[in-house]
Length: 230
Image (cartoon, rainbow, N blue to C red):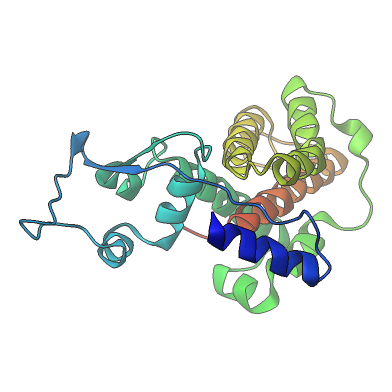
């Protein structure tokens, strides 16, 4: 308490009166396939944070640790965090971003290597173009995706106000789910057996790119990478 008072006084003196906060987090339960990982100081059996990062990776570790409220204990299952399938939330979200990038590359007619060199913003601009009509997007899944994208500013504001960054992971997963549903139903690029009008294709590409940008922003806010391919 004495230390907190000193820091609070320092903040006041520096011109930040009443802005010192102490946020308490809960313990992390380390599991492996649902079984607790037993650690003991006396026996010298432990898993260091560095070892966890080496085994699981920075993205999965950071995403998992931030995915719960600071008021909740975290069950961190090492094997679950390593999975590369849709049961792993961070993989699910990152895969959605990578899938979007693949669609935009095909729309722009560039390779993955060229996209890295040019940057996805440039690739997306080439794929979408400047002449598109979002009014053509009338399918229920298109409207659901649009509504979810429109929630982003309010989600960020709420996370900052309530000190609740875990909501960003929930939002990212919901957006990824809405995108996958949209892509399952709506033909974005013309296909051999599934033609699509050029104007509608451009409008859908614009929606795809909007999802890419918001997913990348969301992942960036929690310090997790948004891969262009997986």
